[in-house]
Length: 254
Image (cartoon, rainbow, N blue to C red):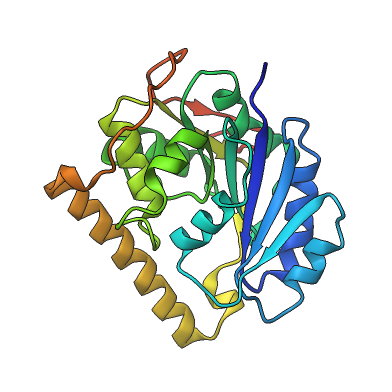
């Protein structure tokens, strides 16, 4: 029997975009249910999510780092055999086909994790770079990713998983234990930039925190591999053990 697919959308002050994001996720036929973590938003984010009765909304009393927000999600997922689809709420141009293209390789047993990367209108340039370079250095930091729940359980909640380094830690975990990862290019998809959401100083500070935390986690796990969480489950047999790109409708051809 196929595993349930639980979509986990994390949001902080994303009222302008969370509605279309949720609609796209809900329209994907592979998704079993959708859950939103409202990270103490100060706008109408939670109200927009609650206006969709199929969506479970959990509001945190105060803001937490992104890795801790994902952990909060997991604590409310009762399905122990789930495939988890993490998704940010600030996406522009997300389509059900993007969601399906990310989830399907994990659901069908081809890989243990699939990472969606937004093309940002750059088409072939970003495809070549992400396909040929980023997977080799474990630098796939896209927030849209599907993975076996066992991977999420093993990584979330560990010392280096609280902040923005969580995605790097997931990559390192899969790389260390031979769990295959697939890159999915999300044609025509982008996200609201920090400078569009916050003031210039706050946006600059947010970017500094993101880059520094990702770089710190990358260095820590390179220099001290023991910081990568331990494998505490038996990985299933996968269809292929290579990182391969997947196209979705709207992809720009070079």
